[in-house]
Each structure stands twice: as C-alpha cells, then as structure tokens.
Length: 113
Image 1 (cartoon, one colour):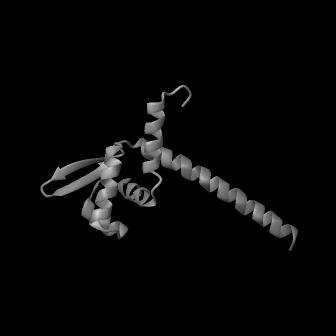
Image 2 (cartoon, helix red, strand yellow):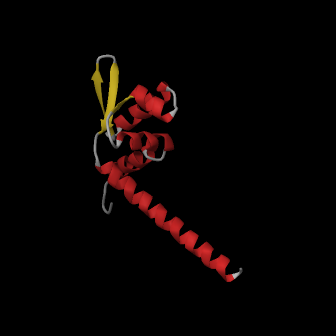
Image 3 (cartoon, one colour):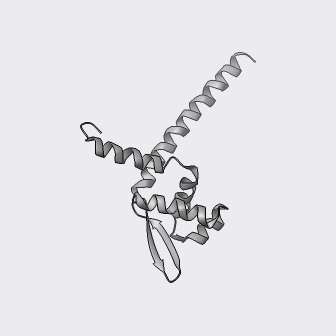
C-alpha cells in the first residue's frame, strides 16, 4: 500500500468494509461452490429475500459478486475468486491466534493445577 494515492486507499477501505459484515461473509461462503439465486441464498441463510438482495447489491457495487438475470430470477456468482484467498489468509491468522491463546491457557492451567 506504500505510496498509493488517497483515492486508492479509499477504495481499499471500502472493499474491506464490505467484508466486515457477517451476513455478507456467509453469502460469500455459500457462493464458493456454485452460483445461486437470491431465493436460494435467502433459504440457505434464513434471511429475508430483501435482506439478501440488499447485501448482494452492495457486494456487486464493489465487484465482489456478479449478477446474471435469467427470466425473472437473478443469479449471483463470485466475480473474483481471489476473494477466497484473502478470506483464507484472514481465517488462518485468526485460527493461529486462537491456537496460541488455547496453548497459553493450557500452560497456565497445568502450572496451577
């Protein structure tokens, strides 16, 4: 990110802001294996059609998902598969942090048991 102009930093921040919503992460995870309609995603998440549609539209604005219309249905798919590399990187970092916390807790418990 070194030497990036302010506009680029704003776009990067907006991209990460899109990913800061758990509902959107859940939707992205469902789209990992196959494209889905709004109705299918609503059913799988337990959220309303309007809620899922709103989140998908927001992700589409940032080119995270792409929309295809077929008849009266809209189908969504991942626009850029690299999103999963980013998510996997973050998940791995969090998992390592929890492993360290767990190991530290076990060492503390063993010391005072």
